[in-house]
Image (tube, rainbow, N blue to C red):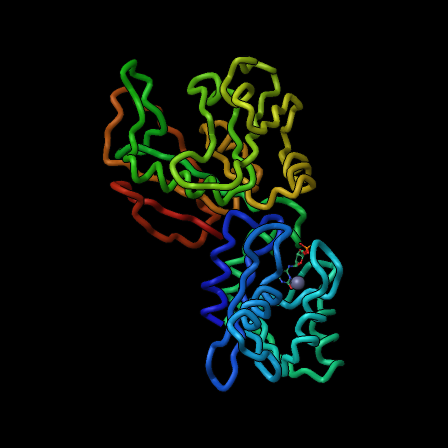
Length: 322
Ligand code: AOF
Ligand code: ZN
């Protein structure tokens, strides 16, 4: 199952709104094939694994399947995986996590059991839940999982108002930020950030097949029509509605199948999200640089119970979750 979780990662950034899923086929205690959901509209993990076995000349008859998600039992972009497993003669199915998709929920397991296949669920369930975190969150709440990212200097200043101020984090750190953007369906900023920085908010430093949608919150319609995000040809939602009491905004983004939203600033927007209790994950990037004209902003992180640390280039990163 850990191998199935590993190969599932190959779909990261390409399968949304579907979850990452991996599948490994085992026969006589040997792995004979593996598959993963590679991109939206592509084969599901089970079907790719069965195909992989055929290509390698292995019979799947009597094999055991280790799958990170309960197999689907519906006709979606692909035919049901339950049928593919039955047709392949799989004798036993081990599943990490159930599928909360109302089209599947529990059906995949019961259909297999009724066909006489031995089914076991829950192996490495927590690891699978972690891997599918945003998919599960969206299925449950129909809203995106909200990640805030903010960079501060050595003293906690979020910005430098001096004239010669530029980027204050390392190049490698920036690459990590692009990696983070790549994993998000949308990147949100407030009007002030657009007016002050004219950011592109695209993924450029790492390879990607998709760009996140940019969302600009601009209730007083202040951003320039010449801003990069409105002119560079990539998708942007310019929101001029008043979204005080932001849950309505998240409902709307959820309806657009946005499963992970990255809030990139600035402090006013971030504090709105925090005050409304809408932040699921807060990523604080701490630089060693000192701003000469600092801007301090207090972020109330008292509701977060977990803190993990990482390093992104030269920066120390603290990841707060609930
Ligand atoms: C599986 N194996 O590898 C994946 C599953 O409309 P579709 O065909 O893209 O199906 C999407 C739904 O299927 C998705 O929301 C989730 O419930 C399930 N994903 N199921 O058996 C897979 N990716
Ligand atoms: Zn499927």
